[in-house]
Length: 342
Image (cartoon, rainbow, N blue to C red; front, side, top):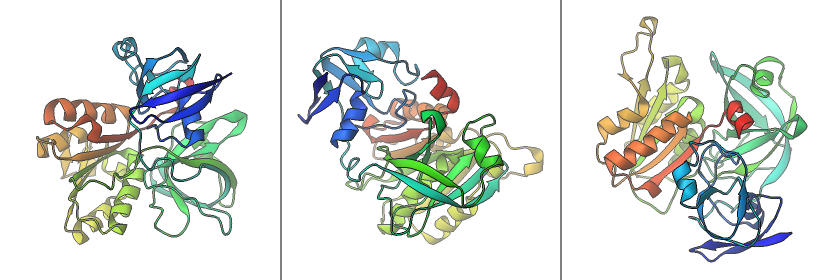
């Protein structure tokens, strides 16, 4: 059965099969609903069902609270229609500008940059290019239909291969392979680009970039895109890690700070050991932003990293610092445990 989905307030309409999710149908139709993980863990695709019946598959409670569910909200990546639906959702201009493609890629380089982080460089086929927005991600297509998502760590305006930042998750289906058996010239397959985490270029507000761990990857791509645009918007990058070595590209950030008059870099370490001889900021990275910017009412925030960091940042910045909720843009990681529960 095919059902019609109507999006308010835009009035856009598209068809959705009864066995697919509203988000999957929207992507297929080129409708720019916001989304991140596509598996019920991040909450980016949350919208309100105004009319109609739907079925909702399992999801992470942090992505959709019981109170929100009672008010009619749903995760569009988990909701399948049982009839015509009318939904309220904030559409994202530009998120569907580039076609989603399945492509082979060759591993060009595997560079270890921290004890548990590698930079994976991927060479696309000759005369092929992947059109995407800085901040978006690809999904590796693994055996048994499984997928694993990683953000592009370089802006599309930079010529050359795609780079990804991958942290080892012991026992992980994909990361165990990356850190043990994967070698240069191996062939992988991926699909992309995905996601609605990218720079809103129609604003001139100052920007806070917030990253934890390898959440730096899409933040780096956003920063490279800002440099490409020759943007003069003030940008402050807060990058948090447990130990100093988690800030594996700190030298690049310090170079930006030295060369770009509108850019500040604030590294934050939460669990430095005596042997680290850390002299910088300590504590939780999202709190460091609040210490420096008690009033965020005139800012945009782009956050990527562990869900606890992203969720805490959104809650506190909106409630305590006056950040407009619709000026918080996030890409929260989902772990393999999340995928198993979702």
